[in-house]
Image (tube, rainbow, N blue to C red; front, side):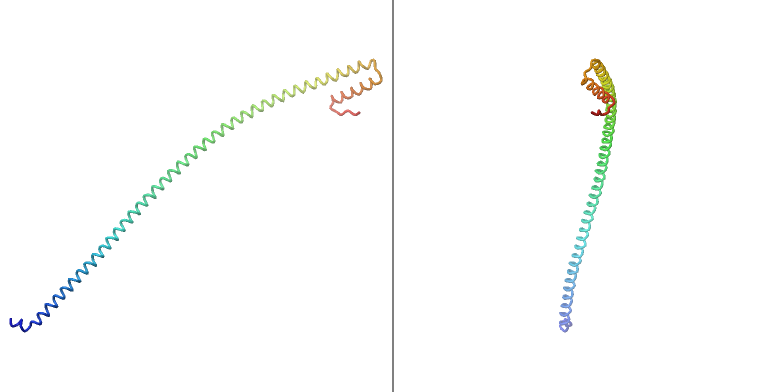
Length: 173
């Protein structure tokens, strides 16, 4: 123990310095471990955020793809409905045109028939005018066999008027 009595100060100093170093190393290890845990927690958090955003992005992509497919399907259905409506409209138009052609043909037939009836009536009217003119001339001729002066002049004017009517010219008085 004699060595301890002479070197007690060295031993205390060595123990103090060793314990101070041990405490400093322990503090540094705890501090370093805390920093490491913080970094690990930050990395884990970043990884979780990355995973979360990747999942969100995948869900959005899937939603966009489904939306695009649904839009394409709706567009196809709309095009099919439009084509069906066009076909139906074409069929209705064709049927209406056929019916119009039939009505036009019937109308032309009726017009021909009416023209024929008018021609027949015109011929009858012309015949009646001629008969009336001849009857009037005969009456005038018969009336002129025993004429008075005024009667002969009136008969001549009536005959001229009937001739003009028959020839479609104006009578000059």
